Image 1 (cartoon, rainbow, N blue to C red):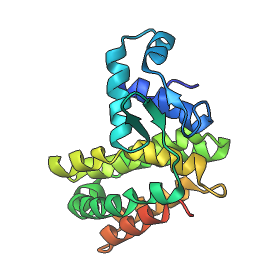
Image 2: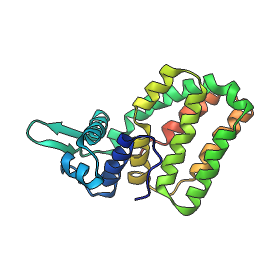
Image 3: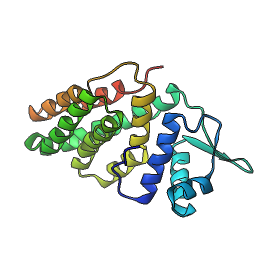
Image 4: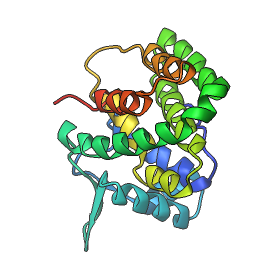
Length: 207
C-alpha cells in the first residue's frame, strides 16, 4: 500500500486498518486483533488501540465484551448519514470563507490540479486524499475553530474513502466537480454556500 499522507502514528495505523477493511482483508463480522496489528507494524499496542477507538467512534467497527473488535457490516445508507451534517457545516464554512477565497484560490487550485492527475490515472487513494484536502482548505479558511473541530470529528477522510472506493457506481470527474466550486468562489457567487452544500450531498453514496 502507498504510505498515506498523515501526521501521526495513530493516523497511519488508522489508515492501515481502513485500507484492510476497504480491500477486503477484514470482512464484515471478522475480528481485528489489536496485538497482531501491533506486531505487524512493529509498534506498541497503545496507538493501535487509539486508532481502533477512533474507528469505533465513527461506527466503522464495533466491540463487545469477550468478543473483541469486529468489522461492522456497512451499507450505503450507513455512509449517507454523515453527508447532510457535513453539507450543512461546509455551507457555513463557504459563506464565512467567501471573501478570503475569492481573493486567493491558490490552495484550492493545487488540489484541483492533483485531482486532475488522479482522475487521469484512476488513482483512488489520491482522489480521496486531494478531495478531502480541498474541502479542508475551505473549512480552515472560514477561520472558525469550532467549525473546523466539528468537521474533523465527522471522519470525512474515512467516509470519503469508503464512498469512492466501495459505492461509486462509475468513474467521476472529481477535478471538474471541484473546479466548479473554485470558479464560484472566484466570481464571488452569492450562492456559494448553497452550491457547496449541493456538491457535498451529490457525493453521498447511492443505495
